[in-house]
Image (cartoon, rainbow, N blue to C red; front, top):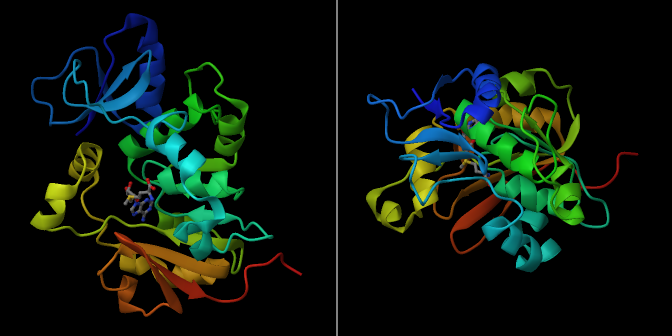
Length: 269
Ligand SMILES: C[S@@+](CC[C@H](N)C(=O)[O-])C[C@H]1O[C@@H](n2cnc3c(N)ncnc32)[C@H](O)[C@@H]1O
């Protein structure tokens, strides 16, 4: 059980709305029986923290830090993810079935893609919704308002539509060939060697989410719904999803993109 902790009385009604929407328990103090990481709400937004004074909280930040650096210096259409998704003169619409903290969705949106981002874990979805709100995309249900960021970041964030839903349920509601590209990045199963290299924010994230052992079951439906292709991000040496060989692979330093192609990525005729 993850709690939403809010010690600031001026934010209490926001905390209650967030807790209601994501079905979290809310408290003004750090609960004694709490697990390691909890959601914390203060004037800087929502974060995942070990205590109220935790200096290395995990927060979704599209306006600064790694997301901003990647937006400015990440290589644009030359990045493997752009090639895997097929961004060229036609910019495809993408369904990101496993949005997580939204890093890939933000890269795709910064390349011009409209992204339907799905996240099933309530705490992760709340963190991502808060990051999007701070980037200028508050999607209706979000009770906090923040100062607007730079126009470019705001425009990118507005291309992302977050839904707190499981991918299997969402896919079942879609018609055949209804979105250009379906993108999947399930949590990799990891071993001790990888763990030593994992950064703090990923450790917090992993302890919260665990591994996505049901991801194999999504591929067939993802291929039905994708008009042009399905892209799966894997650890460099991991087996392909559902043991199904892709049409081709793009192998990078740490990751691999498996591309399951159906037709050329271009505007529908
Ligand atoms: C490895 S993370 C994705 C990281 C993301 N690509 C990014 O760039 O930040 C996987 C995320 O997918 C979510 N997830 C896994 N299976 C899902 C499903 N069937 N439906 C919706 N979300 C799912 C997990 O809760 C987790 O947050």
